[in-house]
Image (cartoon, rainbow, N blue to C red; front, side):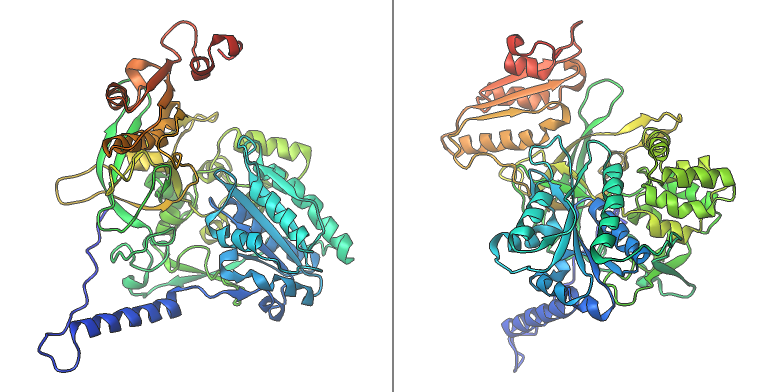
Length: 598
């Protein structure tokens, strides 16, 4: 997918100056207008009305604000649940809907708007929920009679825990909507899956009581997509890893974003640590000619691919030809989501580029797959782990989560479980982009983005070696001088993490290990400002790692910054260079205030 650099798009051919009718400028303007019309008609997604779903018989709409795919996955599960209560549900991306018509949900009998809202960064909405957040914040719609509930996804170790979910819940109530069930709080620092399942099990009975309906008792698996095998499809019509437009990696066109990433050539890939058993790396991505702009503190999103060894092993266990060309088509013809991933494609491409095959599967996946286990004991254990019983939850926690079993490990450890690969592909979540704090300043490196990361690799309780998808893939992205460019699909995710607007303000930075990444950009920028003759305040960095002679990242650069006065002070802690462990906060606060931290 990403290892070949696409040729630049061909430039429109302009007419000769001697031509009688049109000048070059005429043709250029005509081409520009025509291009905008085509983009508007074909590529710009239409905004749908929530009330359109009345015509399709749906009365449950589940909106999701999702950055890593979890909120979208939960929304899909809630929409699928609806049939068990005599209702019809759908999940919806708020970017694609006209939320100003949410008030018209009151025209649909027994209707509910459910919001699965993740919080990103420092209390921010996710990219696809930004417009929705702005509209809620600035608008004054009347949602009287609209029934709703919210499930929030966040991490309690962050200051603004579940801020987006809390805001949506509060703001909808202020606008007159009726909360029919309490705000759910999912904590990714604990067990997000268990938080969601517990909330969901209480939510649906509350819905039944509110509307006076009863569960149908249907607990059987319901397929959302049907398989179509293609035998004679033109290869130019088949997706090979593109995320949006077909052949977008061969013909790159800005603007670049999450659905149209830029293939950035890797120009530098070097190991940062001098010794030790870990691999800490510094990569530089070339964005020349892409029109991509970034600021210090922003994130670079990288789309990795799965390890071919895992992909091939899954194909072997399930006895399928991974190069079969297929489409998974939504059985609901009115749904906006026609496929779970870009189709038509091959099973190999789906497992390599589109599906998450390395994270432990959630309980709903185990429940759906259990029917294919031919050994009663295997089926019983899978259904138990998917249940809400205390025993089932404990088994799922220990056997799946604590043991870090991915879908391959589960297939290997349940020998009788051999599901149809198309159903497996339907159930697995999408492979998500990985976000890294940019370790450079655009003032100093306008055409380059730097990444600082540690390669993830660890042994599980089962004795298997698990490897981080993105870091191991990036590790092997080496610059080459043989004409073949290693490239990385990427785009920029804006951040609120910024230097003070006034350069004269002092700055204190604390960054242990690879946490130093954004501060490398900040320090570079403060140095650039000093070179421009600006009044730059004190710049103090506290940095910690294990051993000075092993993993003191960017040691030479940081010491040079201190020598030249860009860094007013460089305070370091090497936790394992002495008999008594020293933590970074001891250096920051001093021993009197840090008793018990060692």
